[in-house]
Picture 1 (cartoon, rainbow, N blue to C red):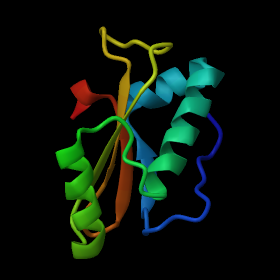
Picture 2 (picture 1 turned 180 degrees about the vertical axis):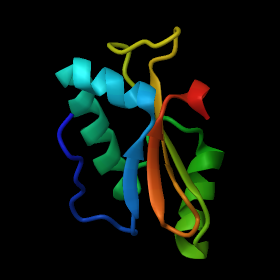
Picture 3 (picture 1 turned 90 degrees about the vertical axis):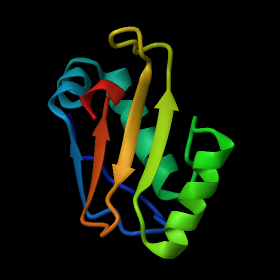
Length: 105
């Protein structure tokens, strides 16, 4: 998997990391790696993806208050254990952003 990068982030991501499961699939599947990159770019621009309206509002508040940010992105091309989702979580202190499968939380 190539290095992930962000453009025009609206907040500091800190170190960008992925869990072993996400990393391994990205190494095996270039389309999944592209999906991760697109999802990360959406996250850093404040597009929280496939979370409900309450979670979107929570994230909008978290931007102002400096608390944890959680986005979810779905793509049916990449089911893992029946779940075609990844989560992107930026820690409250903005030290790290982690890309993971929900079952790895």
